[in-house]
Length: 360
Image (cartoon, rainbow, N blue to C red; front, side):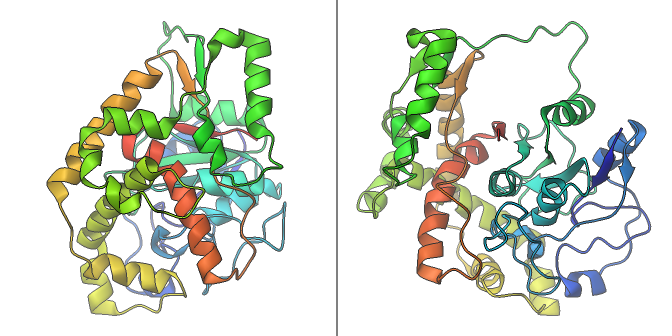
């Protein structure tokens, strides 16, 4: 089929799964079994040629690793490659392999795909097996993949997401291109929104374009959002308060599961964690869970609202990230602002459990 890399959260029988951190590798035994996803690609003819670097414990979208080095972004060597599946995306973008596997919880396939200029898919939650993959947050964990060209991307997708023989693929009848999501890009020079609208109108007709603001739609159709929205109404522009709430709720739920999965190991081993990762991990394992009942209610309402919006014949078109990849070693305050805007976009698919594909 092709040459491939899985990132270092996938189990390979007889080998230690490193999870991006030397102390994790040191304190864990070799895997007893191989990830079914890896086995499926091998059975289809792929050749696995190694494992790739990732952010420690999958807890970043930057792609930087203080222990093993940061993979060089083939499109912009002075900028981060994106993470957490950084090595997988770089290996594909640099033409070292034909495709690669990665995990996506909060954006770890979509972000590096965008930063490295390749195709990347986060499938709908639960459709692709996460067995024998180290969990970050099971509520949101997915296994995705990267490729440089659409042909290879489709071949991998057909192996890992096989369709029934009698399946009829419906053509889209409408494209939701919410203007407010593109305003998050924050650049007056960016013409992506105008180009998308013109392209869809030319191909499908102007009636196929829906430019309703997603933030307003979410506010109107997710009742529990009212319990949180006032805390986000004065955020720095460009921001969408409703999507900031969606991001906040997802990150709270994610932290809670991460704590349940890994707090005991962190507290026992006291691993050496790199800058940024250390603070994020310890915040997760020491933070209070918050109003979990409200978080879960909002998640259910949001999924229902988004299902009503896209039905089975509408494509929601949004930016994957709010701009160009951050510079390596970017100043912390600027990076945090970028991350906040990024997660308000990434959490749309994350909290709903829907699929999202980055198209280069």
